[in-house]
Length: 182
Image 1 (cartoon, rainbow, N blue to C red):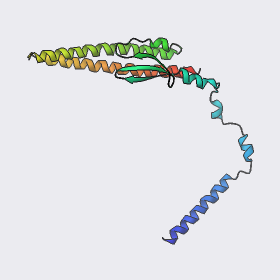
Image 2: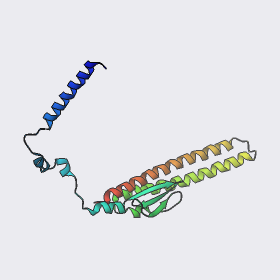
Image 3: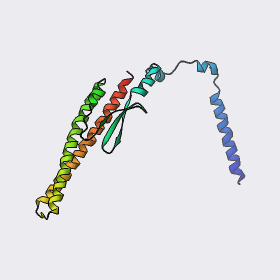
Image 4: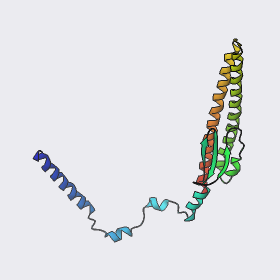
């Protein structure tokens, strides 16, 4: 090993240690006085919630878990399923989140988009099915591919609206959860 590198490392380490010791020596206050110092303005500006507000949030907050086009709305971390939404599943999310006005607005957006998306997607799937049946029965005319493409377009439009609906459901639950502690 090159001794010049070793000497440079030793000198660098001693310089860093010396500056660290100089910075750690505070002549103005003892450690006990430093711990008794007032809190910063950031900590003071945070709202102080009662001790049971965390427990209230843990038991009252809502979340959803999706599975095959449906979403179970669950209360708390391991709580019960309070409702299931999905294709043609009418569940009153607005009533569930009625304590938060912004959550109710988003729940209405979810309800509208979920119904529209479900209806148009189902009609699109039926249209594609009819187009395939007509094509299978030797109906080699120009309308057969048009029917299939129109049905596929309707499915895409409907799935987009279902996706917008689930985004609104997520926002609705977020607004509800945000307003729990207030």
